[in-house]
Length: 388
Length: 136
Image (cartoon, rainbow over all chains, first blue to last red):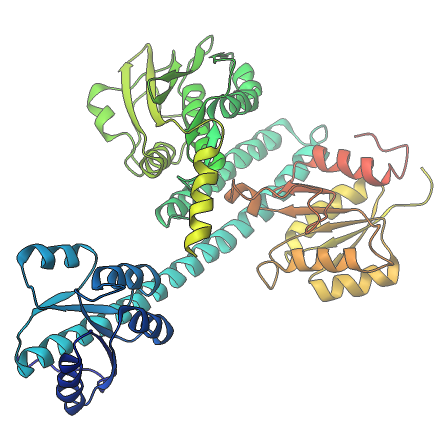
């Protein structure tokens, strides 16, 4: 025990207890140990001071007239969560200790206690506070570094690709009739390969943003029917070019699911894109959405190349792609389904996949239903407003 | 149409500028280039272009947005149409600024790389076609 030492000089401790003798002895013991001790004889006064100065350590009696220790803990946890709380009480039972710890108290000191026990528990509280502060600083640094890295990747990787692609796009547009057929063909191949690279960067960034919690909002809700309409509309040209028919079976009314429109849109986009991409000429894509007892089911069915049974559990792994004769020439980053899986994780959904190689696949997604009238969301906002 | 439409491109990538400039000049437009926001403001006030094509991420991450707000604040520039060209729209599906949003009053947003036919259409829509002999 004596080997643990404080990294910094002792700081402020606030003690809240309605027992004058207890306050005196705490001031005496901790003052002598070098702490800057402040004592308050009521929950109200102590809480006000703690929220004002946010001391590293708060010692609080559970049983006080007026605002009791439990209420003090509750308020401090929600408004000054970094404060380490040590609980003292005269009626130390396991039950009250457990209750206090459940509310977020760090440790428990039953009365009567020795000066040594008090010093020890306060010192441990301080170390805990320092550790939390340090890890919070590291977490922030790491996040800032990641954000800088993402921004760097986004800009530095894409800028040269965009410039090259832009030359080729303009060249293809202005010189289509004058360039030799072979040159034109190579330009088109180059455009396609550059698109693959840009898609890969785009997918990788999306995945990184989801992981960082920047892309999905499970508080938000969106209308799946409108999203499916928008996405299938967008893919209709591509599908027609490939001689694939997209059909939808959607309810007439809106179908609200948990998750913001952008994320749910990305989910639907990736599933529909795959259903078109891994299809065959003359094939069909069906997109169905329906309400099913508190959940919303989205089904994307295709008549494409299918997925081998052994590959199905691996769908959603980063960079995993089924590689065989049928898929070799289909471009893809291997991140589309990984993005889908992460989005489902964020909004609290799931999927099942059925497939018959050679005849098609069904992706069945279950999404949590959200209230249609928006009352859920506005109620939460209102509650938040009252707390802060 | 009448006078040659004069387009100011604001972008820090000379290759991107050269590609778009070749496209637009090939269709009879006159194109000037500014590599950053300050230069763009100086040139815009000097020459009062018919249209500004604006990149977003230049020296500063959102330099283009600040420039756009500045353009809309200035009496002599506020009526010039602006098309924002940026690759950030592809990255952030949630980043959707409506053209009518009053904090960012661009006439149009196009993702980079830009579809040449689409750009020519939009430029013609905003400032007209400079010469008849160029067909698209």
